[in-house]
Image 1 (tube, rainbow over the protein chains, first blue to last red):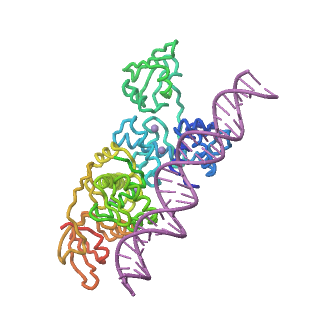
Image 2 (tube, rainbow over the protein chains, first blue to last red; image 1 turned 180 degrees about the horizontal axis):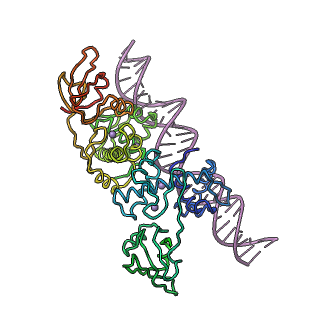
Image 3 (cartoon, rainbow over the protein chains, first blue to last red; image 1 turned 30 degrees about the vertical axis):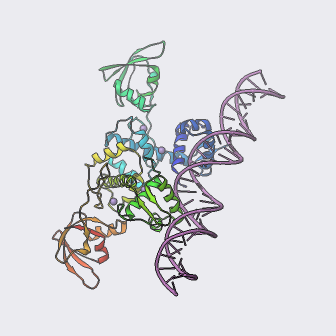
Length: 220
Length: 220
DNA sequence: TTTATGTTTTAGGTATATCTAAAATTAAAA
DNA sequence: TTTTAATTTTAGATATACCTAAAACATAAA
Ligand SMILES: [Mn+2]
Ligand SMILES: [Mn+2]
Ligand SMILES: [Mn+2]
Ligand SMILES: [Mn+2]
């Protein structure tokens, strides 16, 4: 099992996410957009990742992640999400501040560090954005979840994650009082633009656009 | 204030240590030995560090660290030592396991991270090896300390730090029962080779070579 | 004061990770 | 089926961080 550089880890993680966990192929342009590097740089990197057998690369036809690549990507994701939990739970970061720092911390190479961190945090199963934390072996316990805008009128559910975890979106959620774990009920729907009104914890009413609702994931 | 790469931070830290905190000049060969890179690579790096004005570099005559360089080196040292405290105090690492990991963690760029970590750890003043942790502004509270082998017979003191913090030496100290904070008394001295016997906490007697004693720092 | 030795620098090369500009390829439109 | 447009790759640069081998330099020894 060859070891990856920081840049290779970042690309592989991007490919894993873009491929929806290895289900779809991913194009050079998609990766370029995600990584904010030029398509020419992506082509270079894909050749290298192909040589290391973490992706299957057919020129001009995009890439698929291999089993080995999936395993390595999940290790990086595990580290990223554990560090996010640490930052929020222990260092009192807010959930919109953790991403950049975790993007650096995820590359620290030490098996024992991650094992001890996991233990120290009480073996958390989800990160501050509701995303599942893979275990040591790369197993992810997924739970069924769907975008809030797909709920029927009067349906109830619980907010379990966000699709968009940009600082701007997370701060907006803080402002209106939506949070992971909140119990919600759809109290109104506007046919015209798909915007909805929800009741949070049987207390607070929030009105939101379809766009916002589409980035909130709920469990029914 | 230009920003440094990981490699530049590592070299600057080495130069700071080798120069005894900026007091002495440092040679290319010394740096080469410390960094385990070739002298030719060191010359390259010195030119770059000179351009960034963190050292004063006169070809063939070694380098001196500048005020700006000292400040930056102390920031890296601060981060290194805070992470070491975290690893030992929170993640239950032993003091001989923390160095390599802290050598990676020290490069994470986030002011707020270090502030919060410092706070979370209770603003520690010394790392697990007894070395002082510089504050945000690079101020170091030093305390007078001398090698144990320089103590007179029957003198008392307290172990406050180790000079050599290699895993082998630290594990040896664990084995014989010497630790930071221990109160000691020199109970015997062998003229011939400088080896000594000390009494730890008025309980345990330890016999050690001059070499070992020279790597233990005490406060009287 | 010249020579020898050790130290340091330069010259030139490799590997990673990026870029721009040009060429190649695929896929869509005419 | 040919042309066009979009995508992707290659070619050639740049920057960092290392290397080996050769040249330059400082200093200690003769
Ligand atoms: Mn990253
Ligand atoms: Mn997250
Ligand atoms: Mn380091
Ligand atoms: Mn230390």
